Image 1 (cartoon, rainbow, N blue to C red):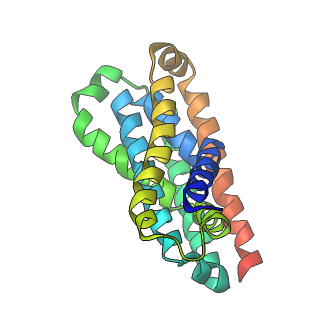
Image 2: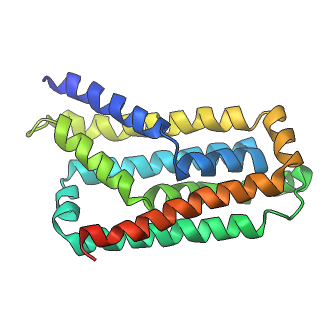
Length: 212
């Protein structure tokens, strides 16, 4: 497989992985509907930056350390699971609170910065994403990749991750989804919190399989 073919295969696999529903999708969709389009886009950028981090880790071969040291991987799973549960609790507690989009828009820049960090930390808190990146790179990247790949892959990965979640943000921030959200905010938030919480619990429960 040529380096160019390998690059295309890696990006295609990462796009499929990004499109799979998970906590990142839930966070971007909810921020887009509940806060603003800018918040959704900020979260999408955070997801892209997280993807760049994972691609850099995979390129450096650090995923092999994570896979070889069971307690380290287990610790990452527990930390990621606890963070997802924390996010779920915050969403659940605020589910019944009324939301004013006019008020939310007044302080939009600080809120967008917060949404960026929520997106980034959600992406980084999922060790399954790290292992997915490592597996894809290990399976498809040549043993001795050309130097240019170290400069091309990270921005390409950012484009894949941020690009997909930008589509999600734009779709869910339109007027119709927002109106539907306002009419069922409590239940939508609680379903989202439940989904994120279950993912967090699955990470923690699964930690014993890799070293605990």
